[in-house]
Image (cartoon, one colour):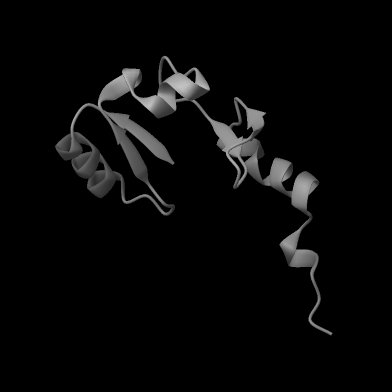
Length: 83
């Protein structure tokens, strides 16, 4: 998750409050910073599935269908067997 906040304090407070279970980083400085501009983010929340090279795999991804998209792209980890 990349949070877009105006100050470090805002990001830290929200991160602590929500106790997020995933990596949470911030682009401090609001919507005019490099990350939101590069991805065309003008409001939040906005969801993207991005690969390790920064390429967008899926836009407007809801949390409800995240697992479905991941399984369709990468397979189901629960189906792996340890023979």
